[in-house]
Length: 308
Picture 1 (cartoon, rainbow, N blue to C red):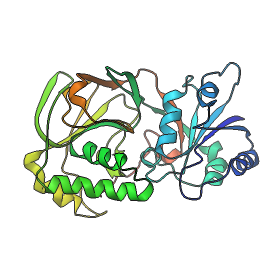
Picture 2 (tube, rainbow, N blue to C red; picture 1 turned 180 degrees about the horizontal axis):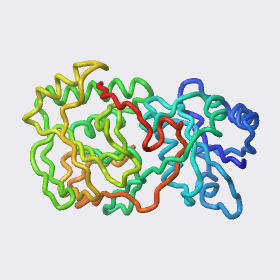
Picture 3 (tube, helix red, strand yellow; picture 1 turned 90 degrees about the vertical axis):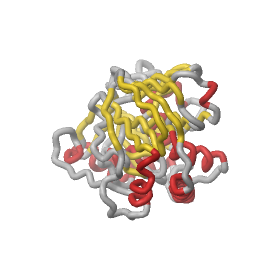
Picture 4 (cartoon, rainbow, N blue to C red; picture 1 turned 30 degrees about the vertical axis):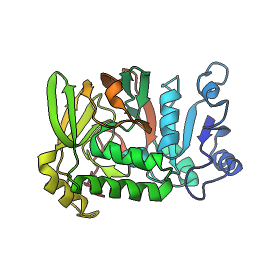
């Protein structure tokens, strides 16, 4: 099986070397070649299936690596395997994928392809594809501040959560306006996330019932008058109940006013007031991600709520 390994040299604390990855997948019966996601030939490798035919693409790294692979792969009929090596691993967690490179490689023969939606956000910048979410409100502002400070790794997750809680407790909010499948939502919000998967940002499970293959977005939001409920959930620890959020499943979302921060996946716009309207939706062609049989659509699986 001809396999293209796309890896991030910076993912995780003690990630495998390129040579180790190649040897691991050779032992699993693959014919691997590799490319770093920050390499100059990354885009070319993903966009030339006729010149370089492969049977499988493997994304080795964190959410940034997986997002880059999913949003750049031109031939979405090629299945993608994920080897989680990042800090949060929101995408892998949402799909029930876990294990080190050797475990993932040895399990390839038993995995099944799961359809996976690719989101888009259109604005003055053009068309931006995303995998996790488009974020507005205090969580987006908190993540933007931490990103600007250059914090990374586990410290980034902890600091983002702490900053978000501080803003909620401090009485801050964002006035936002959006049109969700023709329905207008406007008011003062603590959090507003247009999500493709259930987890986002600093490893927060905000939409446990989200299905990244159903062709729908989960618009997750909470108004400012429910501040006490949000703080109680944030302080509840890992065993807390479901988050006190309202969820609307929708095909199209139009952002009319985005407040003070707009997050497009891992990218931030510090001045969305000058951006104008943002149109958010799902592309018609899905990707195919290999998942364990228990995580395939239709399989029984628990989706417990998680908190910060």
